[in-house]
Length: 488
Image (cartoon, rainbow, N blue to C red; front, side, top):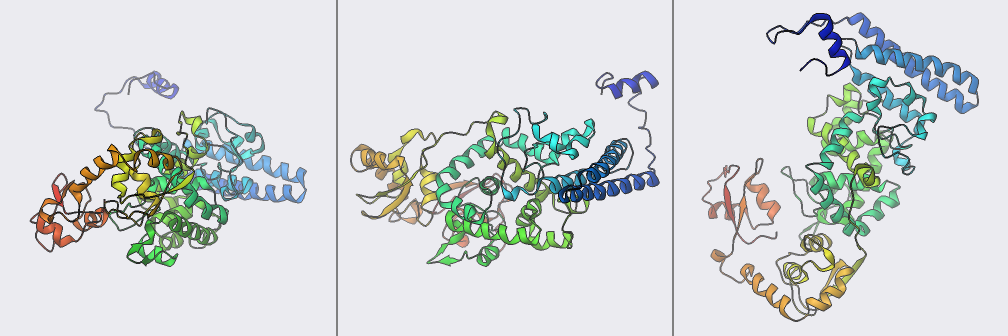
């Protein structure tokens, strides 16, 4: 690093000159006694702040103000010293800030208070004046308090992970976020009622869906989690998602949303309305998180004892869900513009036999749908094999905007004929040797996972087509497999 980048660096350069790259870094001396003293100050400040709030709520404002002033002085001093003390863990201070914000503001489960933030999310807001905790933060740690909306701030006061997640959604994952939004909007009338009935915020439903599947109803993970909200089979069964007439109900957006709402409601009671802990449980298992919490109702997800004991995947998952939820609520603050969609539900009754694939061809980009309608039709009709022709008279769920497009383009004429010709290549009546597609193996894929995800006939059949030997059926990333006629 060159001298002059920061005031601290300048001071170091002026005092000691430029060090040779060969010089070893100075050894930091850890003063355990001082660190323990800082942690004790933090604990006393936290207890005093909680006592001040209790006095204020009971009407003793003067007593509350006196205790609060002393508590905030301790917070400021201890937090500032921690940043300059080798070995002091700022995560413990961040955890306390998160806890105190909860005491003041309540829970995001109650709903968001609306768009109270300025265009710059790091700038002050009117709500700051009512939050002594936020005012108490040293300027060097102000970045901790990202997104200080009245109700959401308590969940994302630890802004390091969430800010990183926001950047991911807004950069290389932006196309995924946009796809998730489009997919969700067309399924919203199927999924949102369950959350609304349970009194849960819609933004969290979207955040989970965006992170779990991107709104692809037939998504299946390497571990066997399935559906738009990625239920494991046993957990799905626990919340009413079974297999009926050969259909796995985890793929049904309405039923999976209902099961997810029931899961969230159950676990919020278990974890004392702590949404981050519930999201962590959803990702890594409620048993694991319950053991870590060990009955401590006031503990924060960001407490080092919890945060660093969870898998890296879960430490990533929780802020990614919260960041997607926040962007769903406030896209314009991040130079994000979700498309305006006419997602009103409708139906079409087929006047001639047609598969979902054929309908996607003849509907094209009707209604300005740049990427076509295949995914939307699949999501809204999850029980149907997209390659199998549905009989004339069958009713399919579609966005209302497609009702006229179907009547205009798909009943008769050139487009349905073209769609039928193209679809003939995947006609089940063709010899099996002539019906196959290709799949490029990705890192982490297994043969059984590919077969399940693609809706193929069997592992053995795919193995025979590709000369793979049992029992390992070894495949490698980059290898191209032949797949027989599959559902996707």
